[in-house]
Length: 171
Image (cartoon, rainbow, N blue to C red; front, side, top):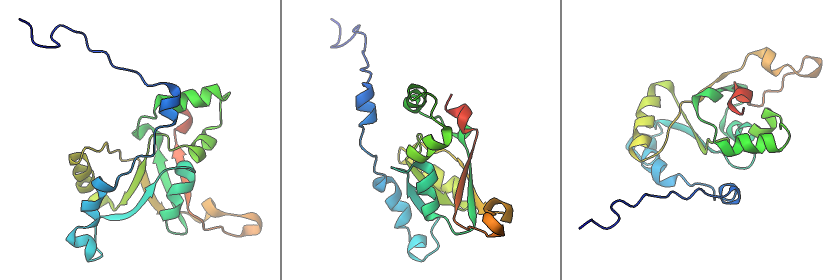
C-alpha cells in the first residue's frame, strides 16, 4: 500500500498580485535582538552600528535616517535580487523612474544592518543562522565635497544614497 500522499503531485499556490502587494511588513526583532543584547553591545562596542527598517520611503529615505551627516551610501543593485513584483509595477506604471521606485519601495531590502567591514561576515553568519537571507549591498563612507555642492557653493551635508545599476536591476 502506498503511504498517504505518495504519488500525488504537489501543487504550490501562487499568490495573487493583491496578496503580494498587501503582505504585511516583516518584523526582524527575533533575528536581531540577540546581536543587540550581546555583552559587547551592552558595553557600547556591539557589531551593529545602525538599523534601518526599509518601509514607506524606500531605500532613499529610510537609510539616510541612520547615517551621519556628510556621508554617502553607495549601494550595488546587482548584489541582491529585486523581486519580480517591483519590476512589474515599474512596467505597469509606464516605466516609472528607477529613482522614484527606490524612493517608494524597499525593492526587496526589508532591513539594512549597518556594520563595520570587520564585523560584516560575523553578523551575516549570525543572521543566516537565524534563517535570514543576507546580502552585502554596499558601503557608507564620507562624501566628497562635490557630492554635496549646493547653490552658490554651499554644501548640504544631508546623507545621501546612490544606487548603482538600479535601472538594470529593475528591467
